[in-house]
Image (cartoon, rainbow, N blue to C red):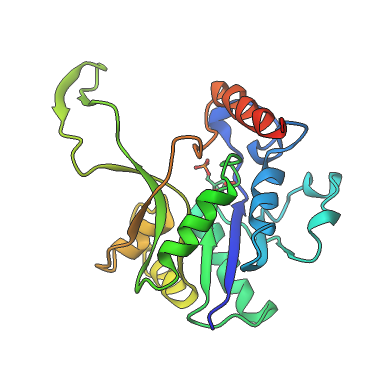
Length: 234
Ligand code: C5P
């Protein structure tokens, strides 16, 4: 039976949020942001290990206590210059550090999506375990989409039919994902699914909800805090 692994690329600086501390360590609901995603992934009984890929010069991880996750957590200090590079470096390092098979599943999840729920995670696992390609959590685009000119003036309205916003986790077989990211050099790969699409394959879109958003701008922190605090109330 194929095993399930989760991999969190956490080697970014998160410059758009405008803080000195890398985004994944900003405090949310009393914990560093990345703690929330690690907690959700580690608590899923099907996931064998959760791999965190840090920047080689990360000086923040060791300032926190991660011992509650010690049975599942694997730490790698091999992050790269882009998200895709961090994921690929992590996948390559796994080949020598743990027994991972070509057809084992890897779920890649952004450290900056702290509001992922166990229900969303289970849905992804249930819908993709028997899928030939794999897929990702996503939501249909709800807003009207405008294309702008260089003066920030709307020139056209883009049809939104068939458009989805990609989220994470994104779940693919170990060898397929490694090969896809290795051969995606030069393509603008901002998520794992785009590397799979570049091979001509069609990842499945698993319906999620907007709470699993990526914390990117300063105002996103307050919303994430609110969602996480509300979940703490029984
Ligand atoms: O910057 P952005 O929010 O798009 O990053 C998405 C995820 O990719 C984050 O978890 C971030 O830490 C990670 N990342 C990385 N290595 C990079 C850039 C981003 O692991 N060089």
